[in-house]
Image (cartoon, rainbow, N blue to C red):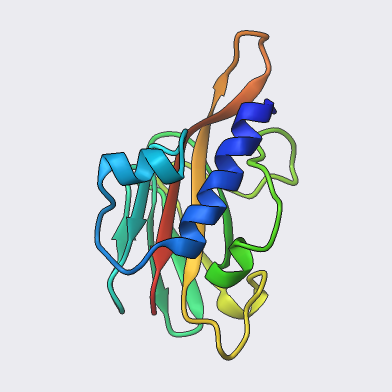
Length: 150
């Protein structure tokens, strides 16, 4: 993972912590706050949130994810306030990397999400694909973030 990718993730965490509810973020705002992230989408309460890579919704006590693409989508889901306080990096290699196979659905209990509490109101689902880098090693690509509001 390059230091530029890590900086992009850190900038996105700042963005997630600072974003107020809106449906789509304008390109200049997204680029200023989260360079390297191709799309940041904030949902409306009780609605699905979708990018070209992933659809997400909270249904009951589950975070429902749907991958409509023909490739694996990697993800990291975390409570929104916690996202601003942690340091993480996108993972694309190995069995420890959380992924949703092509054209698959996944349900995750909200109680198992990092930072979940009775006061938690929003979930951030960071998601991305992988591509072969110049050195032949897989690297994160198409970085996205969706903020899901129950």
